[in-house]
Length: 338
Image (cartoon, rainbow, N blue to C red; front, side, top):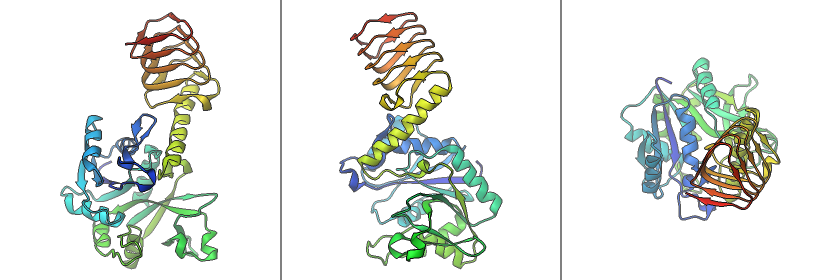
């Protein structure tokens, strides 16, 4: 996408993760959360990508560089809130684009097609700022989208400040924005930290842009799992399960039989040919390439393995770093390491 830049906020420690590592480096289906976000951005054709790092930012840089990610980094030396993170980025970016997309490094389930729809809707609506929203069955804890009688967005109210009627609103703010870069620079410069946490909140830009006469738009995400953030290890497990099911569903639609998919562990780089069968309680780790018409019996562990077509992997086998030729029969409880 031309004239679009993306700022990904990835500076936080993530205290609820109870970890010595940056939150965005915790893995979902074999890759850091931040990698999945960047992959979604790249899938939109956005080349002007900036990642704001802070807590142990050197680890974040090193991890993404090892994955051959083409991105530029901005250091947020003090973590003073999302508004401060965006302001820090804007001060560092010299080759600014007309439109800025703001994302978070802890939302690994976002899809490229959703971001494309979001940006295209923003451009068509001629807004100065657009909010990615979602309608949740239980919106507890989220900021609610406020609309007037014309159904135009007039603001966001946080849970703690909402009235009883406002708390019944199911449309929530995901915190993801498309915004005119010039208007964004002006708005973030007005954010103040006169709140209990002493932080600069990015949500304040909605108020400032509206006060200046800028039109506020919105785009509702269809699949609410896409905007689920990861705050603790339970959220991490849920994100992995959702992405894992996406991978398995894609395989099943391509002609693979997976019995009891909820018992199968898989990562992003699993490829299985049609008419193959996967029995319960199997694990596919790293790069796993299984040919057509194969059978993987229950309880197998495959780590960085290539299996030729028409092969059968016996019950409870452990395969790591090996290349199995076509038409092979691996006996039950085999251990093969490359």
